[in-house]
Amino acid sequence: MKILFIGDIVGKPGRSVTRKGVASLVDRYGIDLVVANVENAAGGNGITREIGETIRDSGVDVMTTGNHVWDKREALDYIQLEPRLIRPANYPAGVPGSGHIVVKARSGDPVAVINVMGRVFMAPLDNPFRVVQEEIAAVRDEARFILVDFHAEATSEKVAMGWHLDGQVTAVVGTHTHVQSADARVLPGGTAYITDAGMTGPHDSVIGVDKRVVLNRFVTGMPGRFDTASGDPRLHGVIVTADAANGRATAVARLSLTVADIETTANETVAAQ
Picture 1 (tube, rainbow, N blue to C red):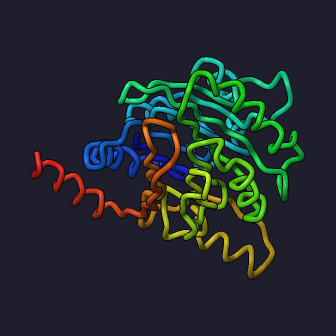
Picture 2: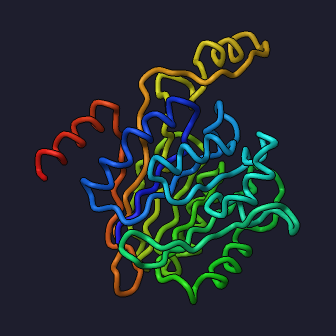
């Protein structure tokens, strides 16, 4: 089983590089399931039905989110129409949508994807360490492979979640900071872990935002509109490989691909066919 997780898709540049990259990566590496965090896909903040459908058409099987999930009002309706768009499970009861989904991978195996959000420097939601156990219990009988998107700010909280779930899930992938961390590894119990998968979007920026606006705010303290940047779009994420017999991870590899890298991958894949 191979799962491709794509880090936070930011705006049009992120959607474009995702559209260019998914098919070639699926072919090149034999990917069975593609998961992407889409909470910044619409203009840098939120998700809409039109954009969600475009991302799905690009080959993304499950879409996770985080603290920006409700930034576009139409997401309240869209999340109830599209079960493969999930939101953090530790939002209070009664909030639209679900915090998990079980889908069939290209291999035919069921895979569960769970979304939870941290509380350190974030909104005071329900305890993610408790809620995630409830979500795992809800899908355990359906799926041997379980991936958790932990959308959180603090690295310590993310690392703690990795250890908390080691041996219980296939992978814990951190999102939210838009900066890919260098600590991808398989923990002793067989859980693949990375503190942050990184950002899929314009890297000639400050975490996706036009750097001139951000620099002006830091230098002068004056407000400015945070427009999405456009330069140097890259696809960031990880590929998790797991044992089909028990669902435990055997490897996790980071991806940091420019458009040129993706085009090379596509050409090499075609040549090998």
